[in-house]
Each structure stands twice: as C-alpha cells, then as structure tokens.
Length: 321
Length: 270
Image: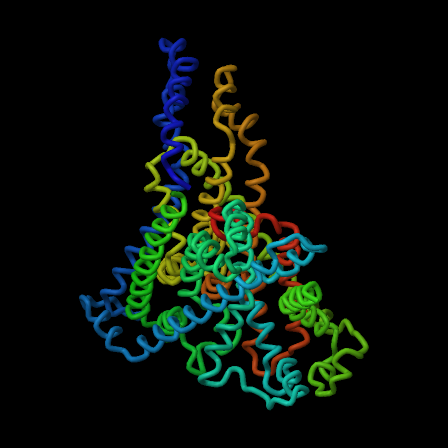
C-alpha cells in the first residue's frame, strides 16, 4: 500500500503521453483536448467523488457541530449554549457508564476473536481433505446482517424455551437468564464474537500462509520448540495483521447498534454509546445532546484509530525491513 | 491419534458456525408447539409445516420489503460504482492528491453513523423526504463510496501500467483505453466490489430504521418489527430471518476467496 512506487512510475507515463499524443496535434487543440491533459483529466475523474464527500461529509459534520452548541428540540428554535452541552454530557454518569460498557465489549470481543482466530488459523494452516468446503462453511456468518444474527441468537437464548438453555438443562446446568442485567452485555459481546471470529481466523490464516518458509526451517533445524518458534517468529511476523484486525474491529465495535436492537434494546444495563445517541436524539428528541454525543463519539474514534493506525504503520515498517 | 484429534477440533469449529444457521432453518418449518417444546426428542422428530412461510408471505408486507431492499441496494450500488470507478482509477494512476485525498476518503468510513444521521434526518424531514427510497439510496451511496474507492484502488493497481502505455502509443484515445483496455481487466474486481456494496446495503439497519417507516422500509426493518410487537411470533420471525440472510449466505459461499480482501479494504489478500 505504499504510495512511493506509483509516484516514480508516473513520470515515464506522462512523458510518453506528451510525445505521442500532445506534440503532433498542438495547433488544433480543442477544449476537450486540454481537458484530456493528464493534469486536468485526473481531477475530472474525481469530481463525482469530491461532490459526494463534500455533501455527505462536510454538511453533516458542520451541522452536527452546530447542533451540539445549541439547545435544540426539533420544534422550537435553537438557542445558543456554547459548550454547555459538552459540560452536561461529560458530567452525566450515564455517558461514562455507556463509555465503560463500550470499552468492555471492545476488549472482550477483540481479545476473544484474536485468541480464537489464532488458534483456529494455526490449526487450519495445512492442507487437509475437504478444506475448501469447511472454509466456506466457516465464512458463512461474516456477511449476514448483524441484526438478523442478533435476532437469531435472541431466539436461541430465550429463557423458557431457547435451545441453549435446553441443552444446558440436559447437561444438568440450571437455566441462565442471558439478557439479565450484568449478563446481557457479555451475551451481546458473545454474539458479536460468533459473527466476527471467522474474520480473525481467515486474516491470520492468510498471514500464516505468507510467512517465509526458510526461517521456520532453520528454527526447526536448530531445535527450537514449537512454542518458541511461535513466539519469536510467527507472532512478530503477524503483528501488522493483528493490528489491522484490532483497527477494523475497533472501528466497527465503537458504533455497535444492531445487536442491541435485536436483543435488549439498550435495557438491562447494556446501553452502549451509539444507543445513547439514538435514545437522546430520536426518542427524547434532544438534538443538541444527541449531536454532542455524536461529536464526542467521532472524536474518540479518531483518537483510537489514529493511534492504532500509527502503530500499524510502525509494525509494517518493522516487518518490511 | 493426532489425526483424530485434529479432525475432532475441525468438526467442532465448523459445527460452531454452521449449527446455529442449520437450527434456524429447521425451526422455520416448525409449529409453535414444536418451537416451545421441552421434549428433547421432539426437537428433531417433528412434522415440517410451511405455515410460517405462508404467514410471512400473506400476513406481512414481506414482498414489499424485499422489493424495496432490492431496488435500494441495486440503484445505490450502481451509483457507487459510477462515482468510485473513475475516482479509484485517478488515485491509482495519477496519485491524485498524493495519498492525502485517498486518506480523507477512507476516513469517512470512520464516521459514527449518527454524525451523518442527525443532520440528514433534520434535512430530509424538512424536505418531506422521509420514508422514501431516494433517501436510503443517497445514504447508502455515501456509506459505501469510500469503501468502494479503496477496494477498487487496490484492484486498479494490479493492472500493469505498460498495457495502457502501449495502447496510447497505438493511438487509442482516453475513452477507448478505458473501455477496451482497462475495463476488461478491472471487471472481476469491479464485480466483487459491487457485490460487497450490494450486501452492505442489504444488511444495513440503522439508517433504514431512522429514515423509513412504512412505504420504503427494508427487510431489516421487517425483521426488527417482529421483535417490536408484544407477542412474538417466533416461527414467522425465523422464516423471515432465513429468507433475509439467504442472499448473503450465497454470496459468502461464492465469494469465499474475496471476503477477507473486501472486509479489510484490500489490505489482506486472503
């Protein structure tokens, strides 16, 4: 993904272009010929994208910030408050609780997904009969609608007749109330893990398949134990991929919403950040507070992803040396 | 012994991810009595019925939801491709904006959905456009375009530059080069990208939930409505889940090689 390779390559292309296309026809250059020049052509291709970004990025961002500085309830006119909304939110205990819960889900989900992913990837990193169908089966949950996944599990985890409690009963464990306060949050994390563990599995598997074979051969000849090889050779080589998983999963988990709607609907002590935004804005119609929360959420995402992104770049620099 | 253990674990892993899906499909053919049963034997020995599907087709607006979802996903995917293809080509060939613009594009994907949802809700409410397909088509254009640009960027960079150069020397114009040289090479990549955009639109819930009520509501809203009513009709809901996820399961099966590449924005080739 480095940008440098292309920049160097761009030079000869424009030279070729000028020699063959531009030079002979200089006297009769029409308006479209000028537009066809590399210098303009590359920007013309970008116009639609830039328009979309302008409308769909700057407009909402501007208005979201504007709303967050006002007391605004959809009906009466907005009154300017300055940063009062931010002060109110930061003093609100519920905000910190939602933030804490989001953090818990983040850590549990990503941790579990990485452990499961690494284990299964190491297991699958060999040729075995039927590997392609099995691989295909395990990939199935990845593209399902998160809402459908959560409703499916909601059904399986019902207290009275859910299949999970039924199986627990057969084994001799008493029924668990999966969406009770104190449990629900972990259930939601588990649902998310079920859907996204295949992602980690196959990203790490791709990494394992791409490892340099000779250094592993050398380690084996030197009599290194498998655990030592894994820790000193495999893991450092996979660091960039692990960072990519953490980065993308963090981005997606910070705005976890669908599984909440499909299960507890923010009740039972499971309210996460995005649900709090939804509740304030679209249930209480407090646009000011809702926008403030949205801006804070954006800010947090930017910080977390910024840090992770620089870490990723560092890891990539180390492994490519 | 080691081989046996290996297969036990492999089967266990596959079971973990497939069994819930299989169970959902089984359930969709059960009567309510069989769904609520505590009798373990009856969980497997039951007489299958089609009542749940009949309910879904004739008692709910399932077909309207599917049609809406289909129209919205297809139209927004076409729009995304029209915007993303030239942009990705420009980024890949000319380094337009020296990587900074590309980074800005991708960072829109970081935006919490709510940041866009609140202002656009106010805007579309003012324009009287809530509960129309147009609104969702536009929003899905926004939320898929950065992804599509990034993924296509990777595919474009795999096309050797020499091809274009020799075409230019042969006197092809720009449009001809795009049509006759680049397009045939980018077709598989473009198809994969379009599939992803289609699926992301198909699965989207938050925007659909906030911006539609009745007329334009999509399949995820239909699903959610089962959970909204007091008495939950699990059988019909199960049937709805089964049909709603069918296209995505099919896609997951046929796009195996590209899923990881798509979900990591092209960073991991899978």
